[in-house]
Amino acid sequence: LGYSLFLPTGKWEQGGDDNAGLGMWSNLVQAGTTLHLDTKHEWSLSALGSYEIHSHKKDSDIKVGDILSVEGGLGKNFIKAEMMGGKPVPTLITSVGIAYYGQFKVTGDEVAQGSNLLAGDKDRVFGVGLEANVIVPKSSMVYGLRIEPEFGARNRTQGWTFLLTIAYELKSLAKTPG
Figure 1: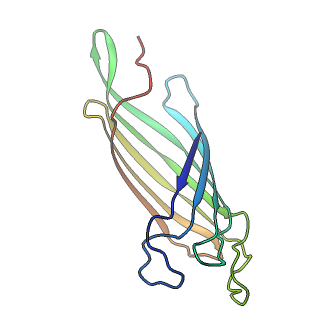
Figure 2: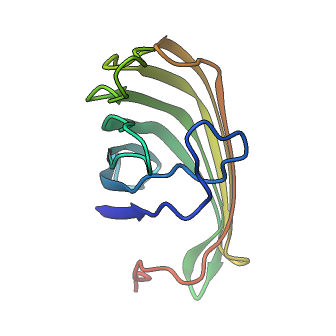
Figure 3: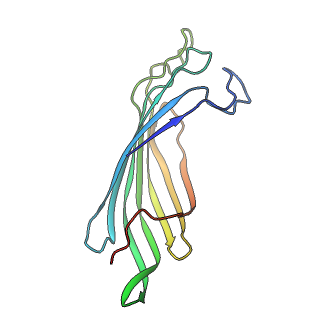
């Protein structure tokens, strides 16, 4: 479960060509889970739902509609381990699988009268592709790559999603067995 608040901190001016912000407050509520499909946790299925609620844009009659995003995937873990103290300890975890998402405008955008381009129209887009992650427990590093071509776009652009992740794990919240 999660909640995020996005503040309108960057410069935003209606019609501006050098805007650094969006000129609106946004709330994001998320809920997700991962199901392990076997006792060894080699196969998993995950899902995450996100709902965005936006305020009116600063000094305008524009209000972006609410957005629902659903994403997740099906993956397989490959675990390389070494024996330490008679127990296997993971030294490299590689996950590969299929990732998906769908994004839907739940409520139409509100715009000033006379500016009817897509006013009230709801957009959507879908993506399905591949994802791979490598976790190196000894160095606390996580690397990931996701590539998803989009399809079924309506009232919005359609293309490809590329996501490269490099992360350092400060401390695990999971308890070590034993």
